[in-house]
Length: 393
Image (cartoon, helix red, strand yellow):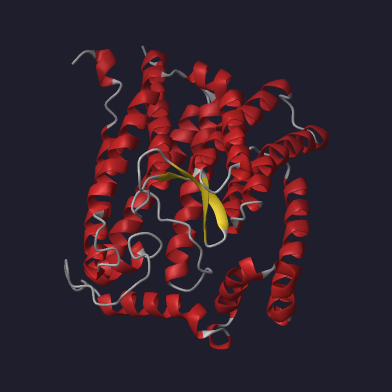
């Protein structure tokens, strides 16, 4: 192996990716014992999604940082265009699930694509470029320059959020807003502006939640029938004893499964608690029941190692390519909110949503988009190795 080839061997990331893939396949295999879909082989499908995702990850290794920097605006525009096409497409092209028109029907039967998963990455990429360009233009930060940057970032993010809310997909839209909030902090915007923004948003959200809890019937009337289930989930989150039996059911099953797993779990094939969509939304409950506290802790450790890698890579890369550094922090925000929300809803600290556990839950668009993001992070790690090597020659 030549020295140039060795740059592309990032052992820590490779090991992490393999561990996530193996964990995912084992968990999905165990979830399949409930035979929710007798004719579906989710393990084989997940292998296909990982394979396609790996192809995406390998493909981006042929791009350099300058190409990504210059092409970010066009990539972002393509993502927005996909969301627009999804919204105006007839049901034969874009179908609805639970009232949300979020998926394209693909040419291959049984395969669908959710563009919002990929647009998360295109938005993070373009936000990273916007921050980097602004920092180059305004080397000394002022309240005025930071306000300008904030408005740019809000504009870039609200465009896809608005289109996603039209689907409507409230849970995915909240992921975008969380990423925006984290990137505002990482961009170094003045804390005076951040605290003012937090006060405004916090007051609005608090008022909205109080209104829903105190006047649920009126909230449902205003929201419309298609969003009644979302209000039920919020009510269940605040007070499980006051919500409907159907709204409580998901929490009850998750508690039962995690609790029954105890320290070491029931072993492969030993899961007994039935979950709806066990291979997607409640995959962590399956892991907890099958492998107990030890298995759940192992999964959390994997995410900790991935997040630690993103933090260190982002900090180290800043002196070489600042926009790549911001992308690391943006992708960190994406992984963090998915993990916190997905695991949080299984233990009752967050409301139930359809947000998957990244790199573990079954799902074509989620897996492929996350693998593409990992591929971009891998390319940044390669670039850092190259630049760092040149620095110390």
